[in-house]
Amino acid sequence: RSNLVLSILETKKGTVWAGTSNGLCKITKNSSNQYNLKSYGEGLFIQDLIEDENGDVWVATKNDGLYKFISKSEQLIKFKENINSKIHKDIRALSIDNEGNLWLGTYNGINIITKNNDVVNIVNIPYQENSLSKNTIKSIFTDKKDLFGLVFIMVVLIFGILQMKTLVIIGRIQVEMD
Image (cartoon, rainbow, N blue to C red; front, side):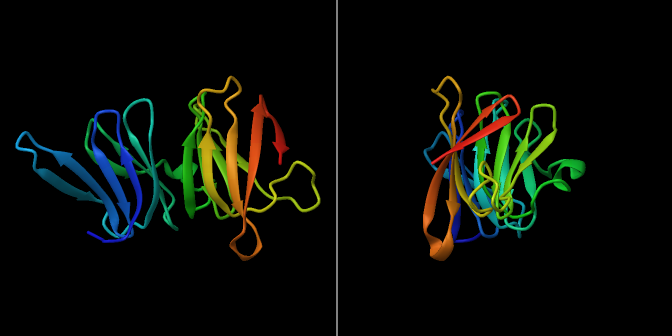
């Protein structure tokens, strides 16, 4: 276990997860109002957690790629190697859009894993108008109540200054707004 907690998630069923600098910790409350702790993935530096529609928990790691905790089997597995090879290994942020696509904010742009397990990469291309302003993604938020499912991206600019971008994905067309 680690004292450095980087991410906390409460699932729809009330289970609390803590992503730490030394693995994943599942926190449950028993009928006597006592808390039980169970650890998974010792040695993984976990930066973000998100629950999907199936109740599984996606795990973003620093330099170890993407993991998934399968609720039914109580197993933490490294996500499909053929997908992990197409995404950046330093994943900082996770979000799931209105269509169920998984967005990964990394230190090398954005990776999107579609429902069909296709991988879309969005990166900074210097001097291209609709490119990301920088590749270092700090945070991703999807507006689930918005009809278009706006995705907000926070990127790190020079000297730690943050800039907020809004990405609107319509089909395969990306429009970036300040």
